[in-house]
Length: 200
Image (tube, rainbow, N blue to C red; front, side, top):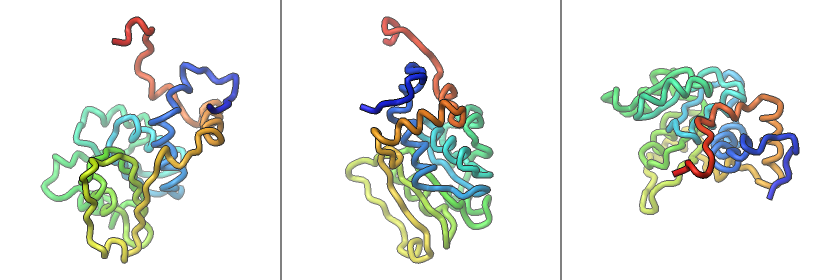
């Protein structure tokens, strides 16, 4: 149970309790993109869009959305995505495509698919020396993460997060305040409002 601003509309802030906070926090609390940096977001579902929103709030200058479904690209612009890559459009691995687009790799990446290949790509697409990749998606229980040890020796960082490193009771009230101050636009995440009778 988290005590939030009593002025906050519950039919809006209810969506902060899971996916949105997870993606938002993965960017703001874990990836921590510096102002003007380049961020790649793998997977443009609700969590990925929230990660893009977090990168936008943090001041990233380029936010590259990576998804196999191009119909998501237009919507993702509203959340700060500036460019898009569909891995199916390229013959080379997507981490190489991103490295070419960004002169050596992105500063930060956030993986929101749970697909083990996307997780490896998200790590391998960050820049040597300072790149940070954050894993958010939950992989299949038998999945194995395989990458060359040089990727670590070249000073890349791999991190994981659960619920965007937010502590619900103490941190969710602050996320609600971001919304109340109009810094976080929750309405963008809500497509429909239906009464209980029509849910199914």
